[in-house]
Amino acid sequence: MTLDECRKYLPKGWAEPIQNDPILWECFSQQEYDLEQEAVPPFLMQDLRGGNIERLRPILSLYGQPGLDMLQGLLEIDAATRDTAERTLPDGQIAYAGYFFARFSPDTAESAIHAAKRYIRAIRQIYTKLLEEPAPISAEPNIQILTGQEGQAFNQQIQNQQIQGRYNPGDDVYSDLGDWFSELDFQENCGELSHLLHESLYHISCDYFLSYYLQWPLLASQGIENPFRPYFELWKMGLHINFPEKDRVVLIGN
Image (cartoon, rainbow, N blue to C red; front, side, top):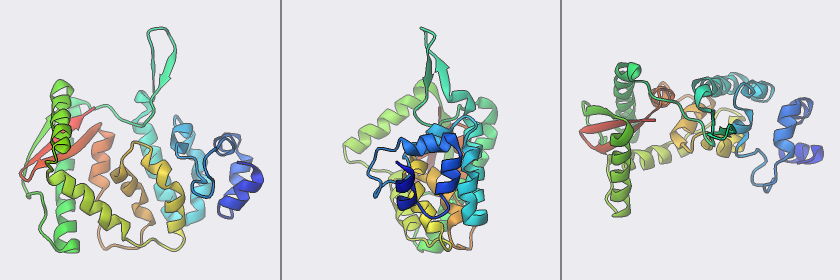
């Protein structure tokens, strides 16, 4: 991307902070995708991890407090994944993680259970009050945490079921909440920011729900607190939540 292309394909106000920051300029100037379709590098957050996400402040501040709230979420992600960003290979070379992820610590198990319960309540509220239909998850399901080989075996079981065309409540949650979120309205010009960062937010961890959490401040008032906050808390603990059965919830630890 050249400076002229930056001005052409990005909103007014973006070009100056990008041009004036050598690290941001390197990220954007090396963009080789179709600029009409993807003016922001899809792996922008990876390029800025390790302390450089703060460089997005001049851009995100163009969108007022919603943009700054998104920045805060990005900074929390960067902080929570500092110790997994790189590792030393046997030959001494440094390998960098392709995506952001946190490590689970057994010390956080109790907090994780509480976060899972809050997330379940938030999901049920969306179904019963906003979608006006029964929730696919019970109010008090059994919650367990699986790590190591047990966690891997569970993931393989879920993958096998999907291959066989057998679906579970988690598939309904993923589909229904995705459809619901896609129909929500944004504040003023915040829809522009959501569109431009769509791919880069998803590619943080190949996780739409994490992206929904970050985009929530950009939305017009929904009358409810961010329902993806507990999901985010679990993610920062290195846990991914699954709903294999209506009365069973499984947290898989990295």
